[in-house]
Image (cartoon, rainbow, N blue to C red; front, side, top):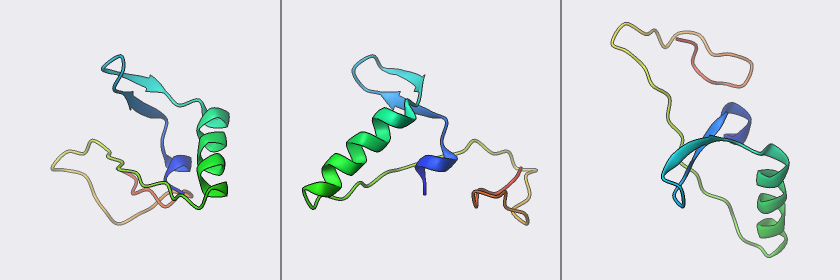
Length: 64
């Protein structure tokens, strides 16, 4: 579910933010799952002090 709400990822090899290659990410997740491994993640969204947390979009991410 978190992957659906993300558009970029941090590549530690290049120390940069890059666009997510969804098919490649989903393949890696399924490959790990087939070996009884689980995918853990950490996601963030930049917000300001004026943002509201009353409404979520269709992905469950708060609209700001």
